[in-house]
Length: 120
Image (tube, helix red, strand yellow):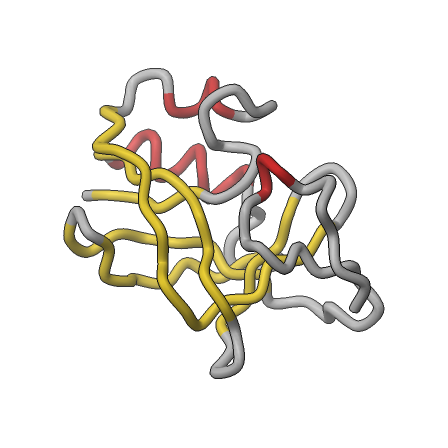
């Protein structure tokens, strides 16, 4: 199975160590339909008809890694796990299921370049 990651699980980010046993298939861009928010220590993406692109990476993972990711993402309490289509085939993505009211938007959809925020 695969997972699309867009925040602290990306290469060089704080939680990338959870994917050390995974196989990185490559970078990926979900062309439209997402809004990325800055929660401070980590991001939150939501699906939106008016949304834009979301940049991330796709990894091949196993059940053990999926359990670790579910724990990190506090699935299903804080994030939902949803299947999407990527350039590498179907993959899981974790989408935020809490209120985003008043949170800053990362308008360009790239957590790794979050200094360029757009106020909500």
